[in-house]
Image 1 (tube, rainbow, N blue to C red):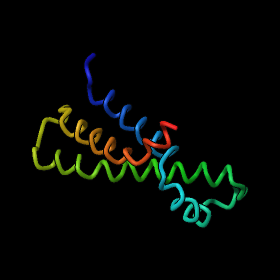
Image 2: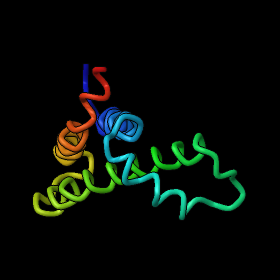
Image 3: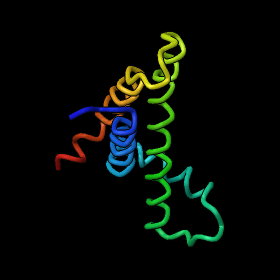
Image 4: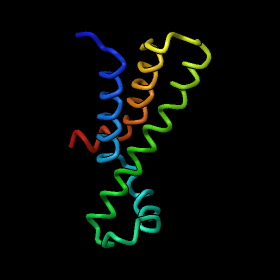
Length: 105
């Protein structure tokens, strides 16, 4: 199986979504989300949890993307190179490690 940039990006997004759903940091994101949530959505627990998961998944994408961007900037690689994408995937996996106990059980 060939891992091109698009396949690796899809894997990074999938890992971020899994981290957003199962992360233990949802306890921190729920109060923040309750304040930042748009007014057109009801403030019931299901909507707050939904937006909290989106917040954690977005934070995973952002914080995992910073080392990948630095890697791409320092190496000045070909725009189609997969090295920075592998960095992004590896850092996203490391950020998902705290969610493993919730995923397993």
